[in-house]
Image 1 (cartoon, helix red, strand yellow):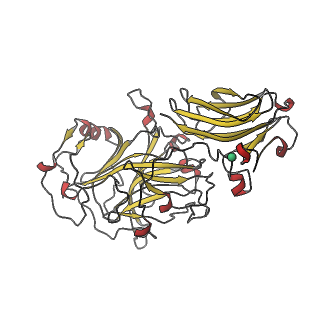
Image 2 (cartoon, helix red, strand yellow):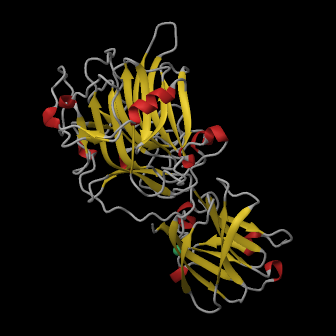
Image 3 (cartoon, helix red, strand yellow):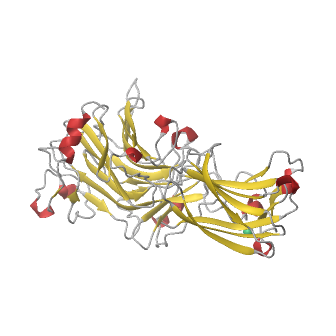
Length: 486
Ligand SMILES: [Ca+2]
């Protein structure tokens, strides 16, 4: 970024607020007005001499779900995507928020089908596109990004115009999470800000918000709502990206100028290099509101036919009743019932292994079956030399979880071990661990409160017998749950 300090300074000089009644309409537009912004109070100033066009502002807090007149719900699959996006992953809550679900690699349900190369509902997400068109202005979303690696939580503009004999004009302004790719990792300490004017000319910043000078560690999947946004100017040509009151990027190159639309959603790329591997079952992006306030006529743009989507959802399929916000189990397939639905134990989140030196077949020392769980449901077995493990990513310092499982053992050396790592996926240098000892006897329900230690980025949950290949103990495990409690 060149000359960014000057702009950051003038943008952060002071907080100010503007009363709607004091604003004059600047020009006419056919953009619909859903709700007049009641009392905008913006932390970030606008460039001097440029005014907001409040008359054509748009605000949606999704109180009654997704408004058919404002939003297209996309049923689609773009690029060389994996599973695409569908209304079946879209919900609104009785608390007035929108929930956009992504199903990761370990989704084992059958209520969602994909549109891309993966058809069984894995690697699917959800997305909205504005029916109205937009231009230069302030774009904001208050949301909780989907808190796991591998799913791209995004808020963006998109307009793609064919050009004879050349690359398309691909005009985009993107906020995407998680970031970290520039450091060779995937992390919610980073977010990506990218603007394009063709399919290759773009300016990308992978901003490390975890390094903020406040000294406070910030992770953008912390379970709190954050306000993400960008101010898109065309005169002067500049885009200012921010989260809450922190400017994350000031771009002065490859600034879009085409009329566009607002997009938001969560989706899974064909490449794990982009956002990491989606190694989770299902989780949610949650949106409180979306705001768009155009700038006045001082900010020119080029009219064009603005792309919509290849396939959209009919009105009768829009979500019609609210749901309660679900408590997400961060452990994929913790009840093991997938082994019945899928008739296999691998590929759905649990790893069944043997310690070094154990030569009995895996099928004898660590396996799942249809009847080894609680109440003769599906469950897992761990005997001498075997160990069962699963990984939870994007679990950062200070995150608290309620952890529980059902277990039974006939021995005195059976444990559950939780291991913490500073790397974004488990490596050979754990930060520390905690052990839960199982008690010999009947089925027991084990409960533990977990707090991720300093520098934590992920953890594993493991079940095994500590006498290893000399153990005579037999463990059965079921109903493993891990949910955020702070
Ligand atoms: Ca079970």
